[in-house]
Length: 251
Image 1 (cartoon, one colour):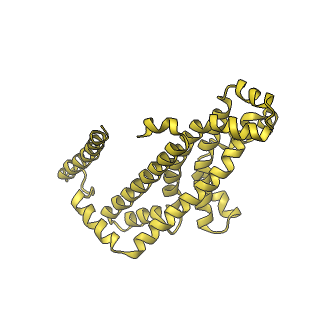
Image 2 (cartoon, helix red, strand yellow):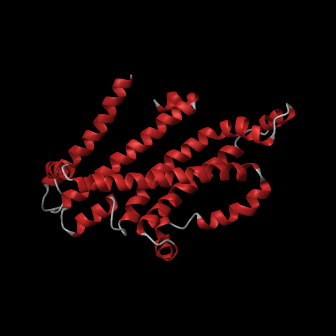
Image 3 (cartoon, rainbow, N blue to C red):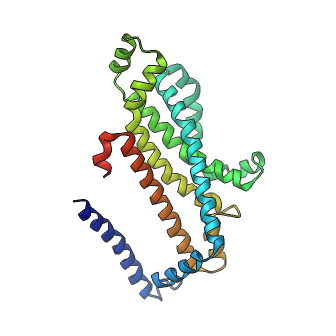
């Protein structure tokens, strides 16, 4: 069964490749669209360049660092907002006002507050990952039946023990969903933020566009897609370990 699923997934990727190859045959319609062969050659050239891998390393580090900080901040905050009505009233309205603002829209203001472009990129990625984790944590906490925390308290559990052993495990499926969504949004925001910086895969894509090196644009896009897919796959594997009852769904 697993082998059949892998074949189906491979067929999906091959179908995209076939559509792409056919599209490049109509040169008059899309004269600047590079063919798969041209992109493959450009990828080999890029892979042989240490500067390309430096950009990959910078982008990956930025995403993972910002994602980790967002996770460390958003989950405890979401647990508190979900469990305490007073804390929710004091914090959630302000967060809801900030949430609709696109992360990239912060760039001009951040140039005043944060000195280096690298810090601005990290903060934009942090914002993109923060809100999905926060909202899913809140919903997960509020989805826990109140009878379970009450039963734990009646057996002598402290508020911290109730949160740690009852509320958090009950909210984990929702938190896990938020983490996976946040990782995807982190990679999306990375490219947008790095278009305005001077390093990373986003800058690599923009630099290729301004130089007319269209195969390299696709190389950068594929690199982001592969890294994003790998990051989400890693989270799914970790989630299957932390939440065994979801293993079947994520297999």
